[in-house]
Each structure stands twice: as structure tokens, then as C-alpha cells.
Image (cartoon, rainbow, N blue to C red; front, side):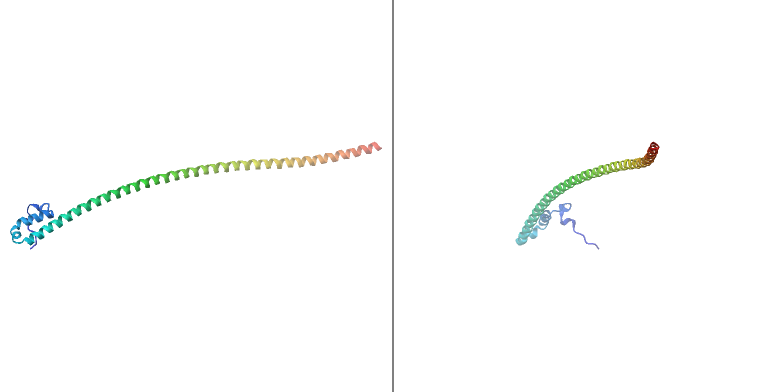
Length: 163
């Protein structure tokens, strides 16, 4: 056999029982007992007052809690906004840094191509100088041979003149 509360105990407050409503229902249903015992009536009044006080404190606490929660939510929203702003700033800085790195890489590529072109020009110049040096050496040799032939011819002419 299961135990159940008597629904008539709470009367019309069974759908939405409030502590003061339950007490009033109890007092009206057991009024005969209360007439006989004023001490019991006084205790019920004290209990009623304590319940009302605790209800008031609970309402105040819930209001304070709601205010605190609103303040906390506002703070969290401010922190979230600041975080989003910082994230945007970091993203912009990263983009700027990335752009600078790309520009530097492009400039380095340009410099490398200029250096390579310069090296090619220097190598070409060195080749021309070595070719010119060979040509000068050949012409010096030919000049020396021609000079020798001229000197030989002069000696021969002087010998011929002395004769």
C-alpha cells in the first residue's frame, strides 16, 4: 500500500501551495484546536512571520543575485568585446607583418637578380679583358718580332752603309 498526502489537507492551495496559504488553510481547517490552545496559535503566528521573513529574504537574495548576474554578464560582454578588439588588432598586425615579409622577400628576389646580372656582367667583362689581354700579348709578340726585324734590317743597312 503506497502512502499519499491527503489532497484535502491543502484545500484550494493544492495547485499553487505557498507557505502562508498552507498555514492559513491549516488554521481554518483546524480552528477548533486553535481556540483551545492560544499557545499553539501564537506559535503558528510566529512560524507564519518567520516564513514571511524568509520569503522576503529569499526575494531580496534573488534580486541581489539577478543584479550580480547582470553585472557579471555586462563584464563578460565587455571582456568579450575587448577580446574581439584585441583579436582584430592582432590579425591586422599579423597581416601587416605578413605583407612586410612578402615585400622583403620580393625585394630580396629583386636584389638577387640584380646581383646575378651584375655577376654576369663582371664575368663577361673579365672574359673580354682576358681576350683583350691575349690579343695584347699576341700583338706585343708580333710587335717585338717586328721590332727585331726592324732592328735587324737597320743593322743590315748600317753594315751596307759601311761597306
